[in-house]
Amino acid sequence: MGYDLRLRVWRGDRSGGQLGDYSVPVEEGEVVLDAIHRLQATQAGDLAVRWNCKAGKCGSCSAEINGRPRLMCMTRLSDFEESETITVTPVRTFPVIRDLVTDVSFNYEKAKQVPAVKLTPRDPDGKRRMMQVDVERGQEFRKCIECFLCQNVCHVVRDHEENKEAFAGPRHFLRYAELDMHPLDTHDRRKLAQDVAGLGMCNITKCCTEVCPEGIHITDNAIIPMKERVVDRKFDPVTWLGSKIGRRDPRDEV
Amino acid sequence: MSYGVRSPGRAQIEQKTLRQDRWWLYPAVTFTVFMAFIVYATWRAFAGHDYYSAPYLSPFYSPCLGSCVKGSSDFGQPFGWWPLSAALIVLIFPLGFRMSCYYYRKAYYRSFWLSPPACGVAEPHTKYTGESRFPLILNNIHRYFFYAAVLVAVVLSYDAVLAFRDATGHWGHMGLGTLVLVVNVVLIWAYTLGCHSCRHAVGGRLRHFSKHPLRYKAWTLVSKLNANHARYAWLSLFSVALADLYVYLLAIGAFSDPRFF
Ligand code: SF4
Ligand code: SF4
Ligand code: FES
Ligand code: FES
Image 1 (cartoon, chains in turn cyan, orange):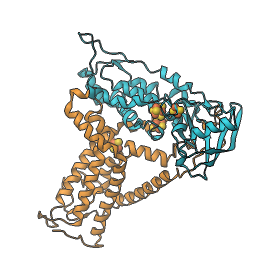
Image 2 (cartoon, rainbow over the protein chains, first blue to last red):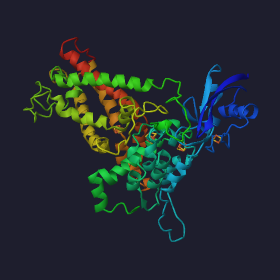
Image 3 (cartoon, rainbow over the protein chains, first blue to last red):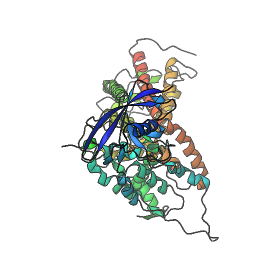
Image 4 (tube, rainbow over the protein chains, first blue to last red):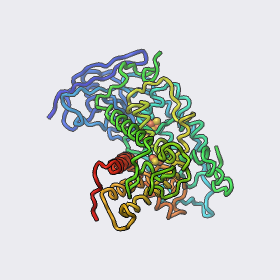
């Protein structure tokens, strides 16, 4: 059964804006993005909204719905009471362009700072071999759709604009962890993760994990293991000494 | 000055959060329960009495290394000269372990420091450096507390075994107190072995699981406990307080220990 949804949507740009009240007819089984599209089609033709796949796979439609960072296309209207007003705003950590569209280039700049993989030489037959168990761990992190909801919710930058300089954010900690667990990579980025990416600023309060639409255990499986690896390199004299004596870690620090 | 979510360039929204659910519940409950535990544990740790009722020793006082009451020191009294409560000599280890635990860190950063109180809810501080500076950078030595916590868990296991003796030292006894100590030590082990530093040490630090099948197996098992680490953090906190309370009540003679056999 359809009903009239009460919707509040943030309208504006860099110079200012406010929440506008709308009433939009919706159908059973629809998601927030459907309501936004109908609003755009019938009442607010100039409403700016970014989307692509409507299947939770492109990571374009990130927004904040009743204050919670979510994908609009994966948020069902049936999660809310029919009488409830649903408030949709752009993500609040990145500069707004217009309406629900923000400038997420912060994330691409940070991505450039992670040194790429440098593999060991090929086997004599020209192939490279990795065992399944050795690659499995990093596979979880490759599910990332780059919606940047984790980057948006992270209080380190959300609540402290000045930290953007020194902090890469959870999405990139996934990358550091994935590469540090890579069976063939020859770069050691542990020091970099702490000193340049600002891993030490994360206080493992797990909001990134809470909002990740792919259900990646960002904190438990990437950030904390990476913090432990940094401890090996920087804070634990015993493991540090062990790695020097046996040269058990043949990677080059970058 | 506008800062945080109201920084220049961002969408101008007056409210610090638009969340309408009960996001304050987790920090409020955590704060209340932790405060209650801190008050209780401080009282019991400084009290220095009613921590032993043969054959049960309170986990707060184990191992009892100060000048403890007769029968309670299974590892001698190397700190016999210590003028204060014997609990203070050993409690520093479990305390440091929990204070630097990744889960407890999350819990107290959220509920005591409000940094952040909940996801998408602005924190009240204007400056933030996280764990990159003194004193919070010290949390990086968590693994050393883990090693100490394993020893503590071994001692508590020993206590639980001794609880199968009766008050006169004869084996083949089990009372409600025995059950209390056993349940407590099981939860303590579940918490301790699920530690992130343990997960790292047993296999997490490897880059080639395939070359270390046994460590891979251990890592897999620890990972299972680790997934429930928060739950065991809470359960073992309750169980250790209840075990102490039980021994306290026996020691002051509030009731006598129901005996199974
Ligand atoms: S766990 Fe760390 S990276 Fe993730 S949101 Fe919290 S502070 Fe940010
Ligand atoms: S880790 Fe999750 S929340 Fe972060 S960008 Fe990737 S998919 Fe989005
Ligand atoms: S539109 Fe692609 S993730 Fe929502
Ligand atoms: S005890 Fe919680 S992470 Fe180590």
